Image (cartoon, rainbow, N blue to C red):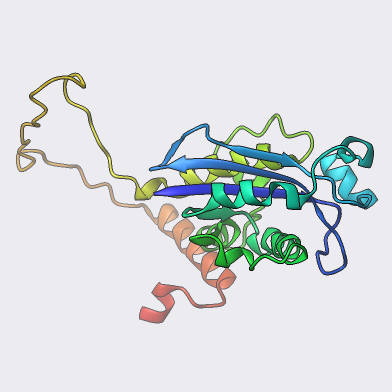
Length: 233
């Protein structure tokens, strides 16, 4: 499966209000392995960034003045994204800006041009209800090193998002163990009889059971009393 992690930086918060994309970063993951086949564009938006946006990404109008317009990189970008699942943190924000840029050059909406869009913010909210789920918060929670993130940058954020996603979905992996060398003709694995192994059973004590019940109540409250255990009860 080919997946592309995408992030943008913009002149402000409102595509409908005329704000534009100033940077696009893309990181490719193929069968859950980073390939290094990434894409990165700085773009001339034709307008200044709002002061608050400039504090976030630091991309000044002077720096962007000689960079290409979105129209000049659109074909390259869309060819790169074709056939891939696009993974974005807070996807509605980035997609709204990409839709605006595409509309300005007479192209279809973004989701019509890619295989699909997955929002990792929604994934994180389902996995960690009631918690902060910004990219920085997820990096901290999932032990992803974001120490180099002094300013937001589209490519750096896409790279961090790829690491966060791999950790978020680690339970979906199939554990594979290589036996022998890659060139060995015999790669068979001898079966192991697990019947002779007796696993110890450790029961929770009263304090642990009480703490567990508190956590369940917190999760249930954060989900609006929609947890499976409440429904089954």
